[in-house]
Image (tube, chains in turn red, cyan):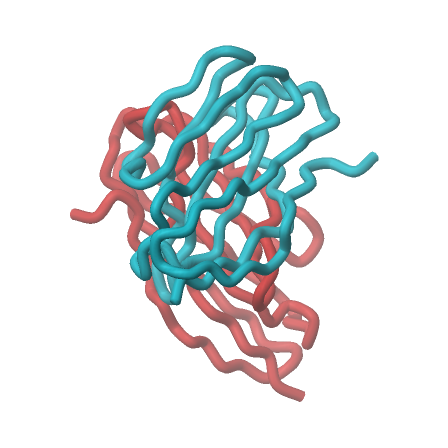
Length: 110
Length: 113
């Protein structure tokens, strides 16, 4: 299993749609989890941390299932400005670093 | 508050040339990282540092070198550039290693011809 695996997409959705991204990770000892957003030709930016209890930030909800080593991100009421690549990120790399998935591309259309 | 500043933003190198990618952060973060990102691929760790004077190799260190003489600066040196080093390079810093989110610089797009 790859360290962090994501569906590459692209996900093409209309404005107002709800879209869900999934991610699996291989290191059962990982203790930190994040979703990052990366716009085209820009640097990754932290979207939200992911906690075992699940957490919500406005239209964004993140869930973590440690038993299944699975992370999800739900975006409700999609906006044009949500178009970007979403990176699933997991801590506990062999150098104590974050491991980045390849990302899932989202395109929100009018 | 500038965050993480990388220079240059773009560079074209000829095979065999050398250059230094600069990275400076003003957040007093101990942890700093260099990643490369190839098209359609995830970020790969090149080198990292847990504090001034301490550096270590990541998963793809060959052809690169780093130094960390101050908390603020973490330059990445490319010696004898090769086409395989064509990539986008990101510097990042963190206050708590992999327990905290990373702040990234805006990146350096390097082409080796």
